[in-house]
Length: 256
Image (tube, rainbow, N blue to C red):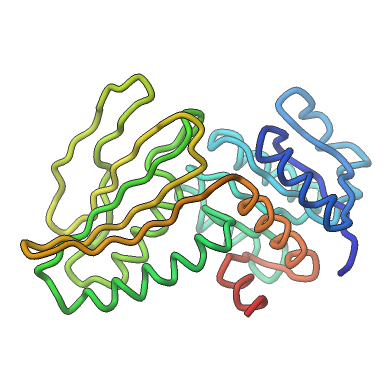
C-alpha cells in the first residue's frame, strides 16, 4: 500500500479518529485545518497533500472544497447537508478530471452494504403496495442537519425502486431537551423521515415496512466512529490514483 500525504480539514472528533486510522495505516498527516487557521489553505504544507479529507459543518463544506480545488488538491468529503444544493456544480467542476471529489453522506462500509440491502428490499416491496414505508434516524446532539444525509440517501434509494413513492419528507424531530417539533403527517407518495437527537449516539438508521398484518424492519446501528474513519481513509487511498466525481459505489466495486 502506497504511503500518502493527507491534509485534514476539520479537526473535531471525526478528524482525530481519521488521523488515528490514517497513521495506523502508515500515512502522513501534513496539515490540520480547523476554524481557527483557515489561512493554512494557502500554506506549502497544504499544497504537499496528495488528498484532503474534509469533515466539517454544512455551512463550511462548500467553501472548504472550493479552496482545496483552487490549490489543486483532491478532496474526500463526508460533510452532509450541503451537497443537494451543489451536486450538479460539483459534477461539472470534476468533469474530465479537472478536479477530484469523493463525496459520501456516510463512509461506513457497513452503511454502504446496508444501502444495497435497502435498495434490494425496496425492489422486492414494489410489488406489495399493502406495505407503507417510513424511516427514522438517531444521532448525537451535536449534529446540525436533520434528517441526516445518510437517511436522505437511503430514502432516495427507496423512492427510485418504489413506483408508489416519489421522494421523502421531513417528519418529526425529537430534540435533546425532549421537545418534539415537525409533523408526522406525510403525503402518500412520500417517505417520512423522523429524527432523534440523543446523547452521543454515532448513528442509527431504521427502515420500516408496515401493513395491517405485519412489519418488516431493517436497522443499521453504528457502535462508534471508527467505521466512518476507516471508510474515509480507504476512500482517500482510492482517490489518490483517480480523478473526477467519485462515490462509495466506486470504492465498493474496487474492494469486492
